[in-house]
Amino acid sequence: MLGPRSGMAIVGKAGYAVGCMLAALVLVGSGFAYYVKSQVGEIGGSDAITGGPQTGAMNILLMGLESRTDYDGNILSRDLLAAMHAGSVQGVENGVGGQDTNTLILIHIFAGGQKAIGFSIPRDDWVTYPQAYDGQTQGKIDQAYGDAWAQSLSQTVNSSMSHNQRYLVANEAGQAATIATVSQLTGVHIDHFAEVNLAGFYELAQAFGGAEVCVRSYNGGQNLHDANSGFNQPHAGYLFLSPPQVLAFVRERDNLPNGDIDRTHRQQAIIDYVIWKLGHEGVLSDLGQLTSLLDVAKKFVITDSGWQILNFASEMKSLTGKNLTFQTAPYVTTDGHIDGQDVNIVNPAAIKQAVNNAFYPPPPAPKPASTPASTSLSPAKTTVDVYNGGNTPGLAGQLSQALTSAGFKAGQVANIPAQQSTQVLYGTGAEASAAKIAGYFSGVTAAASPSVAAGQVKILLGADATSVPPGITSAASSHSTSSSASTSPASTPDNSQSVPVTVKDNAPFGIPCVY
Image 1 (cartoon, one colour):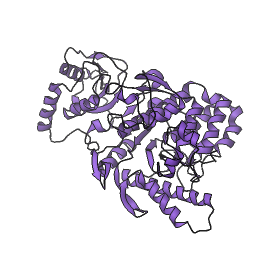
Image 2 (cartoon, one colour):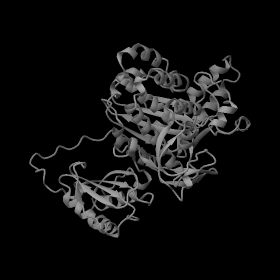
Image 3 (tube, helix red, strand yellow):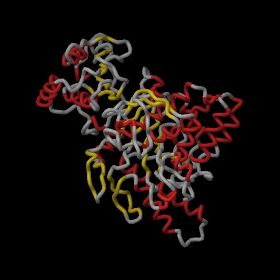
Image 4 (tube, helix red, strand yellow):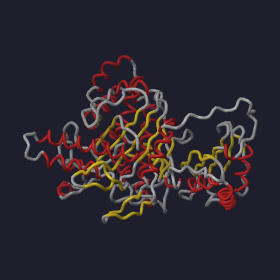
């Protein structure tokens, strides 16, 4: 049996899933009000950080450990480890798993709760810690928790503390170390956190009854079968996954084209599904399912004890999937090697700039009142969104970077369901820019679309697009030699490395297609 607050593990997304669930509780009928308040009041429990705001703009860190133990250090049961495809009891005794944060997602909630942006921080990012943890001053970012956890346990081994109290203190030390490390790397203050374990995510998936995902095929379907995580599906496309397969889906990385980076996109996609389900399938009006979700949250979700989630919920009720976007923190290379480990080499200054630009954007400049709506905007004032529905991985990011270098403004970059031919659509004022872009592609004509915002162009890449058209590359080269300042965002050295995964309104269930 797993006791309350059983050990944290690999998938931190569930923390935000529960946050979204709790946020939406304000929509539940008044008959549930007292019940909900009493149940939600039992979620929390950590003093790792204190004093965060209860409403308004805030930063929330979601974390999850790879531990195969519960919150008190006890190894999970043989049956549960087998169901989760997480090894054996003997394997855990021999060191399989650990107390490392395999998932870190930093989310900024804008004031009013109607918009949120999240950054996934890959587990292998090599960083300098704010202080030494267990004698370590540098390491992968996911190791900060485990090092601080181990240091705490070694310091209390001969104390009068009970076994459970020692592990409570150790986990709070790990939480505090992770929060401090992420805050130092990103340059932003963290107000609250939520944490869930491997077993907790599995139980939440059970309570939800599984999840819908959209998987893009890679290398003949290689990403559909993975021995280590246990992910095993017959085909690509939209799939309904059983709870064990949901866990396997968010854990797989070995057979993905970009490894752990693609895994962060899978994790983000699960949040998209949870938000959709909460908003469309009456989960919050079903007392039985609501009770099941809250029971899991009380056992497995850890938050800072001062976070009054119902106050937070009152502002979050307007947040929908289309207003929640994710990115992966920029990196220099995933092929680094330090101290015998494969690591991601990162530029902390670039990460700080990317996160701060997204979380705290400057107010938009006022538009001149005298500019007619029909005025055709220059490329420098035209925002171009690029969506990849073709067969070439990463092409949307490469094309967006080329267009930015050619003088256009970079917009959204993401994957969409497969389509045969490339389309260029534009909104009011962007006709000339759209025509110019369409001219780079063979046989493509720009078309006006009421679904595209004014001053924007949307490119939908199809199977006929296999590379960046040479004309764009030439234009980019010409622009770079004639312009004294690059329009490419300095926070992301290579846009193909930091492709946002965004909820798509036109996709089934509003979820993105990922590898």
